[in-house]
Image (tube, rainbow, N blue to C red; front, side, top):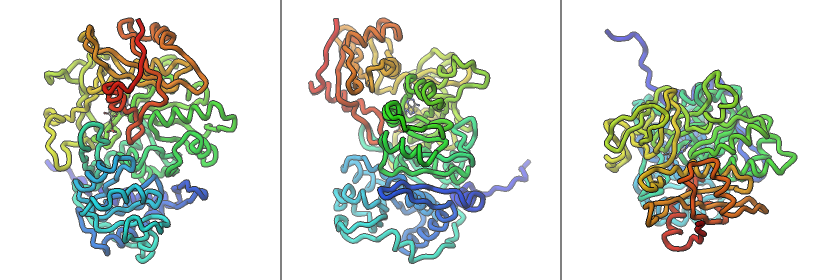
Length: 538
Ligand code: AMP
């Protein structure tokens, strides 16, 4: 028997229409060097129509790739809607990639147009002669540098068209957006999101069991729109009526604190390294006022317990941990304590990666592919599937990343009977000492609880007796001191005795990836080349 339900395609044009019709007066705020610029959802919707009309006149056709090389700002939002809604594919370029990687992904995706913020023109100019598929470059903001040759001015381009572009009826499974993985090993791989996957992912982000964005929220969007669609927040915002604050290049603790004080977001999304910096500044700044925040969402890397405690104890703010990947759109799991959890165990839940959001399934498997019990103890690799989880990569075969229709995440950990996932490591970061796993994530979390420690990253190094042992790379807080002996003593009450590291390096800062996570590859290379001085305790 057939159902009698309608079968309208799930398209991004439906998201922008909803935002325009229902939340027309809600705003997007863009922080600029001159002050804060504002636009309503209605204005953004109309400008997206003008952009689509202009791109059509330029010759952009269905399926063509239109790339952005931009900060989080209003114009980027306009491209987020115009490009997929007209049937082309938005390719968000990571502005922090090395030039060779940037040229690689532009060529691999065969981008035909790039929209670039004027402040990023010099970075794009470095590879202009290596990207032959790019026929047009549109510059947002004043630029008379001439570095890119002939370009089109974004505002002139838009103002030549009027609003009213009719969004076409597309196949909901057609490509809408693409994003390449941050490429910590080998060449980045492209993930292609569909209209349907984006629509469903946006809907999932509005549920209160996930990050629960709603019409009562104003969200400070720190996670970059150039990587995994800023966790989908631009689209969710139009679905939920959530106002957005776009920080552009002002991503350090000081300006973020100022934005929070002046623009009063209720929620904010960022990676733990940013939140660590915000805490550092807020703790020493009497004018810091974080009282508008109902919570912050931290994800993309493990969130240390000490950070969750500091936000709660000093500022009364809940940290919601999110787990996901480029391949998972990214929202896959969110950690919110179950109802009725006593207050003394709330943080035990918040330090976990969380439970999968409705629509996504996860399991833990052993090396031989068997599915492991959900007992909170047995450790294996997480595998995941669902309508916004990728089933392949763009233009490359990677059979090793999939298993019976599930995506192999490369994340190692366990899952308990309530579905809470605990991640102990990435498979390439695990430390196997005498055949047993030591969790670098747990060691880092424990070390960062020491008052003198600002950041800590732990890598595996070869060991004659144990095959591998941990090497702790520690960044001390300015003016603070702590010896390796003292830190090891501190760890002795927090982790198993056989985990206690012998090797300690004190470094200026932990190298970061293009999306602000600890870059352990750089630390490992430093160690391999004898460029990471360390001491060894008895
Ligand atoms: P990316 O594709 O660059 O967004 O990176 C995805 C990877 O980030 C995942 O496979 C995890 O290793 C890591 N990650 C993301 N969120 C978390 C989290 N909450 N806890 C631990 N690791 C995380």
